Structure formats: structure tokens, C-alpha cells
Length: 432
Image (cartoon, rainbow, N blue to C red; front, side, top):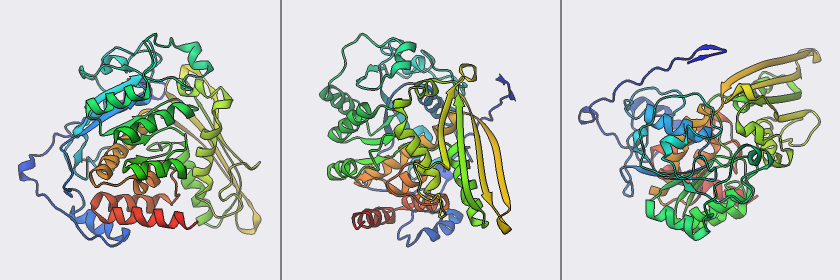
């Protein structure tokens, strides 16, 4: 596909190997995250079996925007990838017991009149969706249901779309729909600022026994009261606010940490983001931005140890969306600057620009989050799935550096010691 950056070409994954010739390896008794290298080299972590595991993951999606488009197309695109293939944006093609193709879409909810009542394959190319096309999606057999609005439509959304005239579902209606479809995991892709709507679906998941992946910056997994609700119900949650594969936050976070690790004092930094999709248009309504700014800022500053460590509101840190440029479509341009002092208090500054297609950039991360949530559900783990949340989300209830986060998640994928790690986090947070 031609773009201002040239011609985009995607490589099809290699066909899957014959499973009958692939050995099944199982791992037990992983003692520490540092055993992951051995596990990875031997392949022991990749095929762990649990008694409660089902053969697939029944998925529901709330919000059929650009992110959902990339997710649904990505599931189709990589369904035949080999177990040992390297897929950009995925930790593993087979994540624990679950291959990409094991994720089956069974339910979808939206409030846009241009999407409600349509097959998901049609809805993801309707309305204001404008992301790059990865592949064609055949008819799914899943019709988009009318969702609950609450605060899900801000000023600019209401100016851009027509809200469905169908009656809004009640809490009991949504719970019934999730149960009837057999949904295992629900991904919530509501617009930034949808505090009440996000919590509505979170409660529906608790009551339906459905694992919840909170892709937006509303604090649920990281909120002690909400996390306890999920834990008490025995329902897993992965959240909050999905990271991108390589986005503004992760590059900013890594480079800020690099400054400190190399002995540079970070004095000031900013991150300015512009994009052309409805997410950026919605964020022109600054009243909806509070959680987003907090989420993006703490994702960077929580990784530091100097003067800016943990700072959310400080004149020397500015991180957040800046403007909507319609012709960018689903592309996002990020402008990041770090100012610091090196040896002799000599100034050292770094400035860079990142250009990405916004929605595909997080689709693979969501696929991993969905599979982690299902593994937790299989193992009877309720509450925040910390090994997944810390590595895959911007605002988990506990922040760790990314290297440690990945090690912890590999241990969780590998087997039952992941549950021990989960319990350790819960107990340590309770002592705070």
C-alpha cells in the first residue's frame, strides 16, 4: 500500500509445521525468572498443559474502531503461522497452549449506527475507521450488538458519528449475551475518557465470569477496590492501558532509563503526539484526558530514579496527545525530547520523531494479553494478572522495568510458578 513513507509490504507467515511431528514439552517447578533463558533455549515453556485448558479462546470486543480492526485482521493474517515462526509484535505464536488461531470472535458491541447490526467483517471497515488494511476478513458470523453508551461518546464523537437508535442494553442484557456466547475474554476498546462505560463492562465481566482486558486508560486493574472485586469473584483482569509494540511511551521510557543507566541526569522531557484517527479527535476534548495523561506520564517516570522519578504533575515533564491532523488517518507522529546533564554538568540533549500506524502497533500486544487472561482463567487466578499487566500495560498496579516484566511473563506462561509470583505481588502490595 503506498503511503507518504513509501510502499508498505507485509510478509506472509510461513505455514504451520505438522503438529504430529512436533514434540510436546511440559515444564514444572520454575524457581525464578532467571530460569527463563534455559526454558526458552529448550522450548520447555512453550507447551505447558493445565487441567482447565480449553482448545480455544472465545473473545468479545467492545468498540469496533481502528484498534479492533487491526486485531481482527491480525488474527486472520497470522492464523496459519508456524509455532516456531517469529511474528512481529507477538511474544510467541503459541503462547502457552494457545495459538493465534485459537482466538475465536464470538461477540461484539458498539454504539455507532454505521456498525451496529452488521457482521464484524463489514463493521471494521465502516464508520470513521481509517487504519491500514492488513488483509481481507471473511464473514465472521458475529453481528455487532448495540452497546451501552454512558460517557462513551464525547463531544467530537457525537459530531462525527450517528448513535444507534436501537435500545441500549441493560447490565443483565450484556451479562446474558456474554454467557450465551460462551465468552472467555472481553477486550474493552472504548474511547479515552469512557470512565463510566468502561466500569459498566468491567462489572458485566465480573458477573458473567469473563476475563477482562482493559485496553484504555481507565484505572481498574490498578485500582485496589476494583482489583479486589475481580479477585473476590475469581475473574482475571489484565490492565490498564495497552502498550504499543514500539510506540512513543516505550521508546521514551527506554531512552529515559538509558540516560540514567549511563549516568546522565534527566532534567526535563516532553512527548508530543499528533494523529488523524478518532482517538486523537476525541482527545481534543481535554476534559477526557486526565487518565490518559497520568497513564502515559507514569509509564515513563516510574522507570526513573532521579529528580523526575514517579512525577505526574511537574513543570519539567510534559507527556500527552497534542492535536488532531485529519490527513494523517491512523498514523501517529510523536515528537520526544530529553534534556539532561552529563559529566561536568555538560548539557546532553536528545530529540527524535517516531512515525507509526497507531492501531496495528498494539494489536499483537492485545493478542498476547488475551491469551494471558485465558491462561489465568484456566488456572483459576482472579484479580490483576500481574505478570501480563506489568509487561503489556502502561498502568499496571505494579511497575517494573521491561526486561524484568518480560521474564516474569515468561515464567507465568511456563507454568504454575506464575501463580506464586502473582501471590507474592498481591501480598507485597497489601503491606504498603
